[in-house]
Image (cartoon, rainbow, N blue to C red):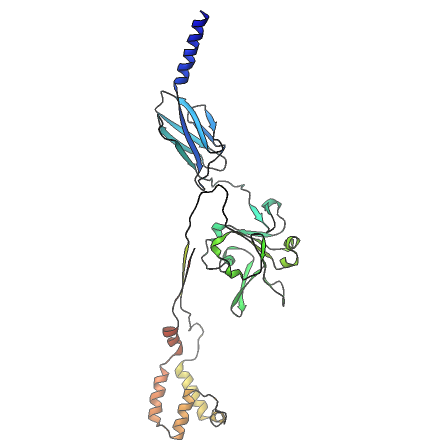
Length: 339
């Protein structure tokens, strides 16, 4: 009798195990295609939950008499996802999770060029520029992008046309004004315009005297810490292509109002009649005189007639050197960059 009960019990357990089917799958991050460990996988309407392993795989049991099932996946930092599965399952289910955009307390890391610390532990005044914010500006160098997106950055273009970057304005009168540039934790003494802006991952700007505790007196004008892009362990191969095209207009030569050609000719005629150019004409050193003065001198010496001189003067009246520069010398600038 006991053997009969044991056989019935074994058959009941076997039938119960046989009357189960399972769903297998893998949870992957949509941003970097890496597996997500510890994701919670459950069935809608059922009290059954499993977690993914270190490779993102999971297996969850489900009743045999079910034709469809809704798989719900949750993980901290990702948007919840629901997938409807038609049973029986034939292929491994790949579920992609997207990073949540509702994280308000995300930890921001500050790079001082010496170490990376959370924003809450950083002392002093600083500003951070992420890769997304940095790429909102189009330019062939870092100097042309930073002033528009980072506060406390001042550009001075008055030093013989060479742009100079300053942090928090003028720091000295006669000394160097350039901030200290740190690239991947090493000081950079070259020209910052030679740095390719497309390799920049993020930028941290140290703006006050607290940076001197790290970099000493060289940080008196502020510090710009640049972190470049680099590969990461166990990351799939990615390929990116960036193209920038900047078109600039011709310079406006008429922005500053100047005397017209006809007015200038009349002024030289008046000065010539008053003898203003006599000393230059009679000088033995033969200084350069204007074509108009030379023409009037030839009329006075009888070399040419007044009618010939007037024809030449009328031709000069309609000539504007700015129009000729704009037509023959200048053209719209085209700047292309590929990376």
